[in-house]
Image (cartoon, rainbow, N blue to C red; front, side, top):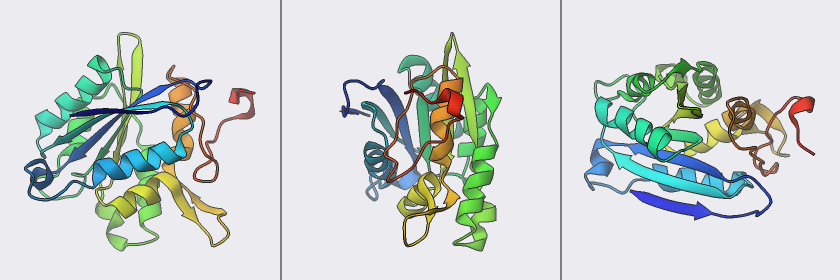
Length: 207
């Protein structure tokens, strides 16, 4: 369990982000976890708001995953929860089911876009079962998104695909996350446009 912060701008809304890495072997110390540092590094570079991170490294257990999501949203007040690992078809991969257990509403478009991005690299992207949900409780709401397990794939799905000049070819899913957080009553997330440009309708952009 770790609580870290990355205060960047005193004028921006702060955001609390839950990071969950799901792996039997990493949680047992058999090998070093790469998911949590990859997520925190990317978010620290991409998000301009002060970010407060709650990190958890847990095994592939459906109840443990679901309970951890509930803890981060209900007790820790996270606005966004990102999971990594456990989204394939093997019998131990139960992250999507556990995420749905903790949800109040489903957001399937995130999983659809992640598979579209990954299909540019490997045909086995269709085996991924990543999803996203909302959890709403007592006036507080959070977005929960399942990400792939590999560091390279995490960056690709968050950031999207770009050509040699940096022009976006396929939007990353994080482009849609700030506006989603707006709509559920969370903080106004500002991004480093050199990494990812948040999309909002013109009437939702703060000057």
